[in-house]
Image (cartoon, rainbow, N blue to C red; front, side, top):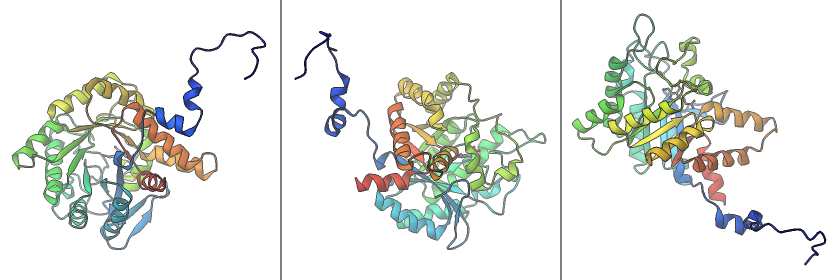
Length: 336
Ligand code: PBG
């Protein structure tokens, strides 16, 4: 077949052989994506029959409890096994964030309603005070606006226990206070909640990519251009992420998370290689907004760009991904 006119030498290895057809490519594919890998972050608000699209996150909605439960049935039927709740608190914000641990607060009622209707759906809740504070910071502040660590941790524990009391399966501290995982684990043990999982936002960076999320929960206005640099990590740091993860694992975290996602895949890989523990990444609101915006312009193929993004998370070492694309992905995977 063909003549070796130039008497050239042949490559010993032709990597293209394993790429020659779909069967060949799938045979050697190193990573796969399934709906089991996905956690869907959802925004919830008070009232009934309310569904508000979030302008900077097209396709994402703030849902009242009744619509949340109805939608969750569909997501679950499509293969989503875990959702993560983020409340939009329209009143009852305060300096001390008391609403965060109201036993009949919005999140607590959502958890109860979900567990009653969908006992097999994993319900995860976010532990942080920013939806509840008048200033939009994740903790309790002093007169200079500095977020006080240990007092904040005390409130976070109350918040987490109220979620667990309501039936939360996984609690997920996103506040970046020091020592909160240890304090939380101890509190959970003391109330006999031995099997409640902690997914720690271990390496959470002070990122501009959270912008649309802050619009979604309505904390950006309260923050008044302020920042979270005194507790969230500096995007310039990599080693520090390993230090954070080591502490959280020692303090009793079951799973660790790196956030944001795509720009921080080097951190994911280092964490996975170093600790070999369940490792997650949060594909955050700004990352979602970028894909939506570019595809709305016709500049990117939405489905392909999402699926490529997700497989890159897997390749980098993620066991799972928190992503706003989760319901769409679950549907696509089901169609295949
Ligand atoms: C706040 C919190 C944030 C996100 C999750 N929990 C925002 C922040 O730290 O300001 C961001 C999620 C996203 O951007 O999708 N505790």
